[in-house]
Amino acid sequence: MNLIYMCVFHNENYINLLQLLMKSFVKNANIKDNTDILIVTSPLFLAKIKVIFAEFNIQFKFYLLNLSSLFEAGCSRLNIFNYTDINLYKNILYLDTDILINGDINSIFNLNIEKNKLYALEEGEIGHEIWGGDFFDFSTYDKKQTAFSSGVLYFYNDLSIKQLFYDILGHIKQHVYKNKPIPQCLDQPFIVYNAISQNKYDNQLMKPYVTTCPTPTSNETIHHFAGGPGSYSTKYNKMIIFWNRMNKGKVNVFQGGGDGFGHQLEGTIRLLSLHINKKVNYVYNHKKNYSFEHKNFNKDGLINYITSALNTINNESPSNICEPNTYTIISNNQRTIEQIITNDNNYNKNIYYYDGVGCGASLPPNFENNQEIEHTLPLIRKAFVENMFLPKPSYDSSFINVVCHIRLGDAVGTRILDNVNICKIVRKFQENIKYRVTIHSNGNIESLASNNTILKGETVDVLNVLSDFINADILLINYSALSISAHLLADPKQIVICPDKAGITFQHRILKKCIKCSNYKME
Image (cartoon, rainbow, N blue to C red; front, side, top):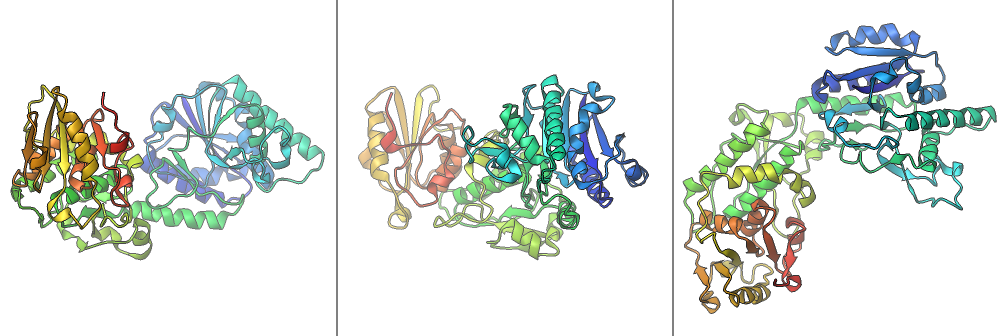
């Protein structure tokens, strides 16, 4: 069994924070039968909590303690091992009341944890009084060592953690007995000091799951509205505004840029990643008037390809809009999601057209970087690669296929190209008969003719070009949205070689596995 517990003491208004927290539990947490929720509170608050919580279809348990002061309230979480039924539970999660749940709480309970560690979110440095300060002997400890927030604590029900909590309570009792001043952050410095000095902490594991600085695009499971202990009004105002925005819905987006197919494809991929990461709502079934700046394409084929991919992702990460064409279209957006939510009263009734890639001179607002996009690529690959409208590659897959993109034509003189270095790598592959080389270009590449090389010009349909790029064993990408999109969609095992020099946003758009021409070593 799992246990989630929260504490409410001293200030009756904190029941309102607890109510918001429980609303977010009902809406987002996906509580299972193997998880109990325990409210640790004062007998004076019990009746009011029960009345308010009657609206929730969740079974609550209560643990009553006679505590009244602010400091006692802060320390109340440390009494959990005195709870009568504590031995029923294996994994235990403590939450401050100034929290909203933004996702499936089981993602935390499914984590593999050590029995003798207290898991919390990295925050601050132990040299500061909020995180221990003079409790530490700085002849032994570095003042810059990172500490953690005590607002979310996750731990295994083990004797070592039970002893840690008792040691913390003993430290507090001794501190009070000596009439020393109460720390401004109440029991947190005691928790941090004892956990670190006993090496019973981990402040890294919770990073993907907890944030203490929530924004409208935060996708962590737990949103903690941290602030000074007892500052009810500030916390409540922040939480109620955020809760209203959460329930109003995410900003609705669609890839609204024109330009070439590759540019629109990369923009769509990055906006879809934002959606899958729960930062926006991508409106899959919106009907855009597509146009493509190409000579070598079948418009219906490209539209069918993109629409099919959107339908696939919609099945696994659905949009919350059923009739998108009743919404107002806001074109050419250069604002962040946060700016839209803050300034547009009816943003949930709009669809915001975003480019997703930008002009090349700078990254666009809400750019989905490659650390974030790697999390969503399996689903995106399924949609765009296992796609009935994507043709098979033009080459024999029984060979080791090297595919290269040489940009010429209108790209020459308008952007930074590194074709000289790319061509050097191509010639190395041409020297080895085990490779079959396919080169796609929109210019004259006759100088690269070779017995093991096929040259393809600008009349080849763009979907065939994309397929050749995606399915290559080794791909030489260029400063091009089409080949960048392809390497995102390709199998992770694909070897990708990239130019040494390109536009200033290029390195932000390619995966870490990409190898610069100057660093590539032939096997």
